[in-house]
Length: 269
Ligand SMILES: C[S@@+](CC[C@H](N)C(=O)[O-])C[C@H]1O[C@@H](n2cnc3c(N)ncnc32)[C@H](O)[C@@H]1O
Image 1 (cartoon, rainbow, N blue to C red):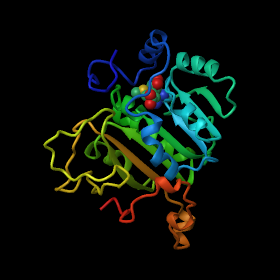
Image 2: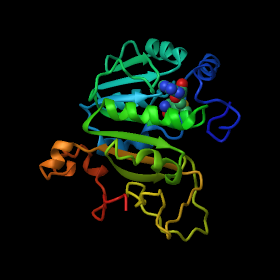
Image 3: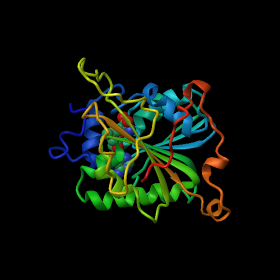
Image 4: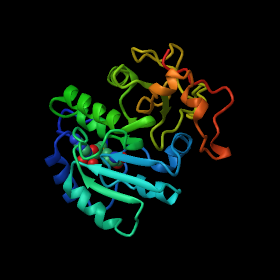
């Protein structure tokens, strides 16, 4: 069974029937791209443990369970596959911090505007981008994500999609998102012994232009890297008052999670 999106043209990853059939066969759990342990530094930096979190397209991943073990208190998980949701609801019936609902991310009308502090998406926009009507599905999804996010909230997108293909979808005035990009090698990637590159910690954001271009001297060590887009929904009222979100943010990171001092958040050039 495929574990990446390389077969995008073969399977309709945007189709509920595809996922239902897959989850009927697939017992146990599987996390696409990255496990929580690798993503934790960024999750802890941007998401308070007390936040209301919406995990879109949760599948049968253990990411939400791991977040609860790490202190997160309130995670609503949705997926278009009723098979996955029934399975996960049963598995986690003893964990009150986790809620599971069958829902299409393109129509989350059950949730009022400004419902969540955070939306996490690991592989779900990717699935829609592989389905029929991909651009329309992506626009519907991102519009809904923006709507259910509180002002000041964060949409964390973990994807294989590089900035040239994802930034044009994310960087739309209507969402008013400030986007910070991180790049992380796939699990198990080993730097070639002769590599002379001086890539720094993946906790350092990578500058990107509005067209989705990386700096000309940027070296992508792992060509199959994963991209993490942290999209902050700017608060119009704070902007009017001349305050930035950074002025108001309480940093939730452990001291070990702190960014290097040369951290630069002016990421869309
Ligand atoms: C690539 S898997 C990722 C699963 C999980 N997030 C992970 O990290 O392992 C994509 C998930 O998105 C779900 N999905 C696809 N289209 C969806 C939609 N329109 N609404 C909600 N979920 C959807 C699929 O059922 C599948 O569970």
